[in-house]
Image 1 (cartoon, rainbow, N blue to C red):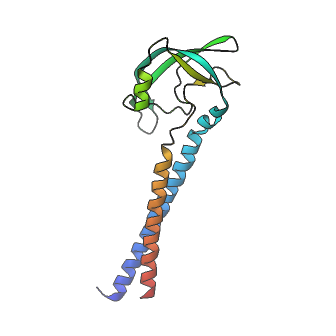
Image 2: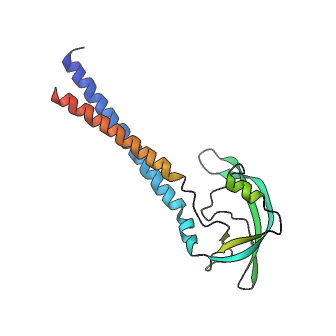
Image 3: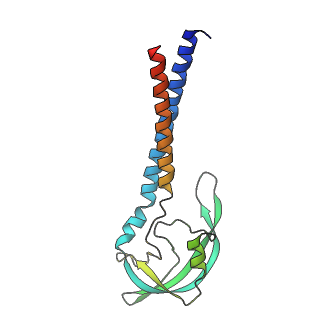
Length: 170
């Protein structure tokens, strides 16, 4: 291989790595924005009022997941009743962000261990008491994925920059 061919091969490789880095950066940005939007309900629930509630059922159910190809995953469903401002309500929303809790997780096993009649803290939206959840937090599952994509994008861009610089110096 001639030095000129080597130069152009490195140049093309640097351009390809830059394109890959750009795609990963866009994917990371989309993951960050989507995760931030999906956790909006959990952030809003931080101001919800805590009231006492009673478990009416705890079971494993199939939870539909959205996407191009819909599918289901096992999830924990805890039904509960609560009283807010003298009126009784019922709900089964476990997390404020709507993410399902897997029955195999430690949290899932803890929720499934509750028997009907057990006392729980229910967080109620004062503006709409029909909205309630047993957990106000968010899973934040999207954050490590986005950070990994950003690291990969940075690594690919750094490698592309180094190869491009090396090919320019020769």
